[in-house]
Length: 107
Length: 113
Image (tube, rainbow over all chains, first blue to last red):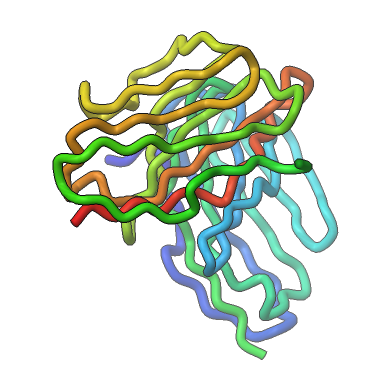
């Protein structure tokens, strides 16, 4: 069993839809990261959270430490949101990555 | 510069040759990380530097891989006697003590023929 599991692996949505990507982990962590990898390969760090909820624009990330689960939500999705979304857990010293969720938002 | 930079952006080499990949972190960032992403696969942690010390080398896949960092600046990842399985994108990231948010460089795409 992978230490970090994401679901779904692939997700296709229509523009404007509300999107949820889930991440479950089995190891103890100090923080969880959500990353976005664009088709060209560049990676952007979206959130780092250790408890509760964070919001940035149309993106919302939540984490439940007791249940070892995090969700990334995208409101009013747009084709430019199409990317691979990666969950990573661990400490500041080392991250373990999920396999990613490929999101495609159709116009 | 404002972000993490890496060089070269692309490197094609022959099996058995040594390669050196460079990472320039964001100025003032004390932590530096190297990751690898093979084609179609997820990210793998390689090594972490705090300053010029590497307390965690557990991700280095073999003794052909080594990394150095000069102070709190440039880091180099060296792969000796490259093998075809070393072909991947090598990503570098840095973070400050104030926040653990990691800022990623554009990566170096290594192809071993």
